[in-house]
Amino acid sequence: MRYFRLLLNVCILFLSLVVSDRVIQDVTKQEYEIFLLQRVGYLEARGEGCDGIRAVMHVVDNRVTAGWGNYTHVITAHNQFSSMSVLGDSQTIVWPIWEDPIFSMCGDLADKVYGHTDPDLTNGALYYYNPATATSQWFMDNIATRPKVATIGHHVFFK
Image 1 (cartoon, one colour):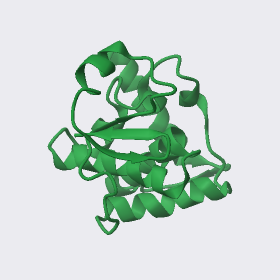
Image 2 (cartoon, one colour; image 1 turned 90 degrees about the vertical axis):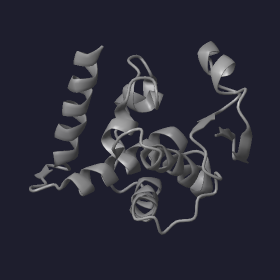
Image 3 (cartoon, helix red, strand yellow; image 1 turned 90 degrees about the horizontal axis):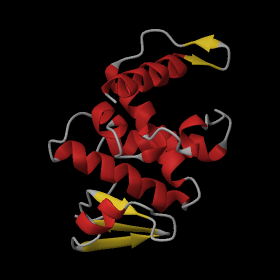
Image 4 (tube, rainbow, N blue to C red; image 1 turned 45 degrees about the vertical axis):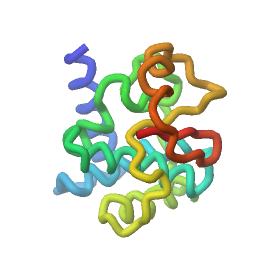
């Protein structure tokens, strides 16, 4: 499993460097982390509107602030954001088109969340799920029993 995570991170980095037939050179750690935040917001919540996307990004930021690791680790850690790390999740192979207005909006939101200039609608949430689509019994037994702090779109948020 450790090998898979490393391979996934390398693939994401490679794909982030080769975009629209051009190579982006000298990508900084900050730019890479903002790109990952943009991608996880898009993959996890693109159908939830602006506030839903912001909320998912704030969960990532809250985890970083809580000391779970840097953005890259938090976003790509196994089973944390299934669209980024779970083998077989249909979202892991979705690659947004740069011209997609939702993906563009995700970029703007990622800049604000990463820069701590966007207010956190989740009240400090560290976890979320969509009750209509969640299938993890572990999540239901261990996280869904925690205090609910917000409902934004179809997602329920917990501390």
